[in-house]
Image (cartoon, rainbow, N blue to C red; front, side, top):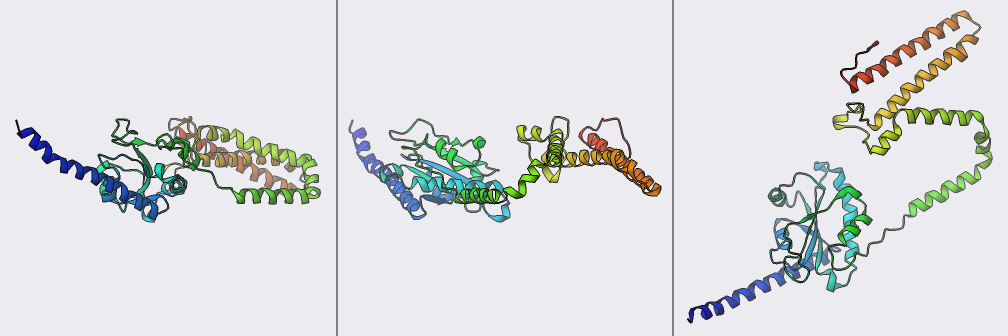
Length: 316
């Protein structure tokens, strides 16, 4: 009968030691965050401390690869936003600030952690909720941040505020360069009204603008913008396979081909007939006819690249 009370008395020091251990871990994390403007730089050991199984705090962990050897462009684009949100969180009162931590784990400093999590891409953002305490939601697996809103700091702060004890007080910095550029352009336009007014009144200027706009639009510009297609594909590929796909560089090439074809037809119909010298007239007929033939060959070859079963071919 005395065995159970005796074992209970023996377990008390271990429980106290575990409680002290968690408090010591939190105190260490607080010091690490304060030493780096609210952002903890993680390695394998500090990652284990931050994700302690008995943690009473939450955390936002940014996995990245900033070394130039890794050539991770998205990592470099997202890092300033995460740093800005972490800095904004450092302005929160200590009672709330010390219950949520912002941390960054770089691949070269935490390879073991990346391997343990099976992480093969970056950037990745995990939110770990408290495992114990009043803010615990009974979830131990991390919440993965969705980058569908892009890499901007404002939506990042908005989303992470769902898991912090208080709202993250992030405010976008004033873009003085934007205001300065706007003011400079406005002054230039106002000072150049006399210069630009005759151009704006010219029918040829409007005609050229309409023709260029038509060429770009008929080449698929809005198709690319609406679908959010990239400028080019993997390995520098600039022609997207299939008629339902198109890269940004295709718009430039196709509009150039259309423009050159249109210019050749205009030269044949508007300029060449009025040449008084027979030799020049014959030369221009050959020249512009050759341009039309070659450009149509290029255009048809583009169709063949997009669809291998396209049956027609001219020169190329």
